[in-house]
Image 1 (tube, protein in one colour):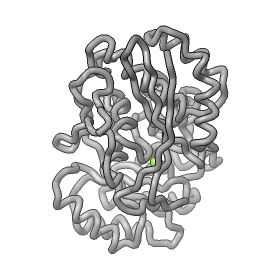
Image 2 (cartoon, helix red, strand yellow):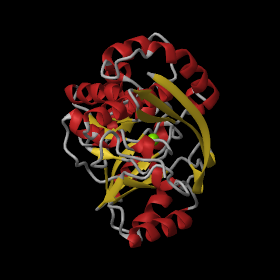
Image 3 (spheres, helix red, strand yellow):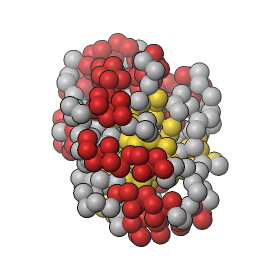
Image 4 (cartoon, helix red, strand yellow):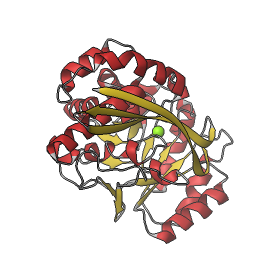
Length: 338
Ligand code: MG
């Protein structure tokens, strides 16, 4: 198989603010794997927060190219060879996605059919990024009025004492189901104060309230009146058992897991441990969202709005239908560069 790749920078529809950062554009990598005249594509969205960059992902792809071999269906063997190279989960995810895309195209089947899962999933949340309470409420009201989304995820963690007010302001303008994501910015005491108030406002669950690895996780798990889902704490299969001690669910993302195959292993491990399962995303194009859609069919909660936060999605094909991000019916991942 021939591997090629290129870096791209894409503008967001609006500045995206969370607890630790504000982004106006996203840097990512597109990979192409060619075999027998057919090409499979995948996307890497390396995250600074996890020590990855477009440069480190590019260096990884250079080292990975000779390890791919000539059989695109040999997922386990290819994965084992790539696992010898440490880290770089976003780049591994891009290769895993490209292999699935390629296999689907070679068989003439969409990836969701190759995986044997239904073309169905829970509705995605739409992310209301961090802002002042009135601003978040105004944006939430606009999204609710458009009627395209069936649930909202509110970014919290501003460290200004107004996080509960943000939720109260949004709740005053919409009855849509709400979840919140604190992106590691509360202490245990702040979480124990805020979560009962969020429960009273009808919030369904809280994502990553504490810093990853925080020693207070077990206590919060025991006392929180709402389920705690772990994102920054949960990257690969090796993290899932530890998350059962500190939370009630995990947020799986392909850019953290290294692709579809590890994500599915994580879903089953989480189920065996009695954890809830959510699938999330980075800000990525339809090429990054498409491989997550089939995995979403196995999850309780879905947050796959990344391509909808871009000014323009250069890989159309994922379809937002009645609030659900559905994979295409076309072979492979079913997205085509516009
Ligand atoms: Mg999160």
